[in-house]
Length: 68
Image 1 (cartoon, helix red, strand yellow):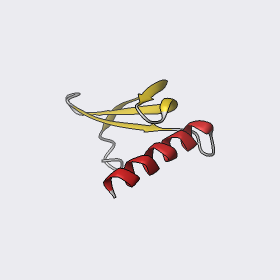
Image 2: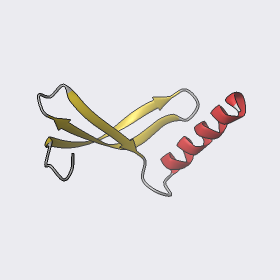
Image 3: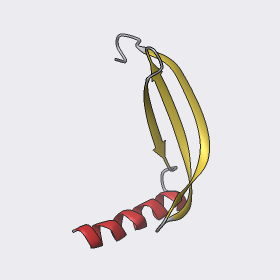
Image 4: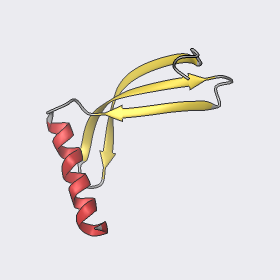
């Protein structure tokens, strides 16, 4: 997809995602739109070594302690 130049649009945003364990987490969001706009790839990530990244990690650990 990348090599073929199939991505028609790339947009970026910053938003707060509310997580039931982690609380409000600021993330960077990228949306890649392909073709007829019915296909979108969305990525969200917190800044490395940020408090938000630590909140996500705590939420992940809480989930693993329940699921195993």
